[in-house]
Image (cartoon, chains in turn cyan, red):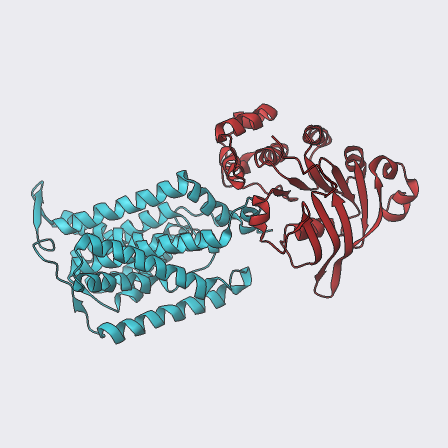
Length: 294
Length: 245
C-alpha cells in the first residue's frame, strides 16, 4: 500500500501547499507574517458548510467560499497590516494578525460549537472510488489534487506573466520604487490578501469535504505546518511553497505507513530544522533576494 | 511624443516655500522654484544641501509643508503613485529600476504608468531605437546590467512614461566619465524634444552646462538662482556655496 499512501501524502501536501502559497505571497509583498491565515483556511470549511446548508450546490459553495474569504482577507489586511507597514512594525503586525485569528476561532466556536460539524454532500461524491493501474483511489482526493495543482499553476502564471504579477513583484522588491512606477501599493496589498485568503479557504473547503466534517481546530495545526513549509521552500517563493508542501505531505504519509503516525508532526519539525540548517534560506530562497529598501 | 505644457505662463511645476523637517532638523527651509514648459532646471549644491529631499517632497514621499503646483493645480499631498500617473516621473539616485524584473518588464511597467494611445510595441521600439544595447538585453533581469546600462534603462523608462516633468536625482552618480557624457547626451535629446526636466546634481559643471536655469541650494535654502551659463561662470558662487577653491 506504499504507493497509495504516497498518493494520499501528495493530496495532503497539495492542501498544505495551497495554504503556504498565501503565507509566502503576503510575506513577499509585506515582509510580514499573517498569523490570521490559518484561521481563514479553517473558516473555508465552515463557509462551504453554511452555503450548502442554505441550499447551495457544491460549485456555488466553492465560489461563495472563495469570494467571502477573499473579502475577509481584505479585512485582515485593513485591520492587521494597513497601519503597520514600516519595517519596525513586525511584532505589531504579527500580534494584531494573531489576535484576528483568535477572534475568528472564538466567533466560529460560538456559531458552530467546538465539536466538528459533519459536512455530507449528496450523492457519492465523497465515497466514489476509481481503479488506476490496480490501485483503488477515492475520486474526490484526485480531484482535490488536480484542482490544487491547477490553482497553483494559475497563480504562478499570474505572478510571472501578467500585469498584476509584475505589480506584485514590484511591490515585493520595493514599495518605494513601485510607487514611483505609478503602482498603488495599498491596492496590490489588497489584491494579494484577497488571492491568498481565497486559496487558503479553498484548501479548508477541500479538507472539510474530504474528511466529511468542518472543525475549528484545524487552523492552528495546518497553519503552523504551512508556515514550516514556507520556510522549507524559501520565504516568499511560490514554487518553494509547492515543493515544500508536497514533501511534507509525503513525509507524513510515510510516517503513517511505517507505523510512526504519532510521531508524524515530530518528523515535520525535525525535517524543517534539518533543511534550514543546511540551507538557511530554504530550498528556493536566497535571503538576499530583496534590496535594502530606500 | 512628449506632452507639452499649456501655452501660458503657468509653470509645469511650481514649488513655493517648501519646508521639510526630519525631527528637529530642518532639511528644507522654505524653497521656492519653478520649472516652465520645455525648460530644464538644475538644482546644485553640496552633499547634504537638501537636493534629494526636495525631489522626494515633490513626489510626496515624505511629509512637507508649503505649496506644490502642477500646471497651476495644487497637488494637495496626492500619493506618490498618483503623481506618477499624472506624469511626475522621478528617477531616484538608485535609478529606481526593478532589479528583480527583466528589462522588458521594467519598460512594460513604465508603459502602464500613463494611459497612452500608442501600443506598448511601438513605445518599446522607440525606446530601443535610443538604446540598442537594451534591446539586446531585454530578457535579462535588470539587476544583471552594468551601472551604465541600468542608467540607460532608467532613461528609457522615462521616455516610455511620457513625463509631464522628469525629476532626476544625480544621473551621473556612480558612472564612469564616458557614461556621464553618454547620459547627458541622451538628456540633451530629451531637452531638444521639449521635455520639462528638474535635475539635482553634485556634478555642478555637467548640470549647469546642460540646464537652462539653475538654483543653488545650501543647507536647505536657495541662495542663488539665475541663467545656468551665468551661474556656471560665477567664481564667487563656487567659492562661497559649493565648497570649491
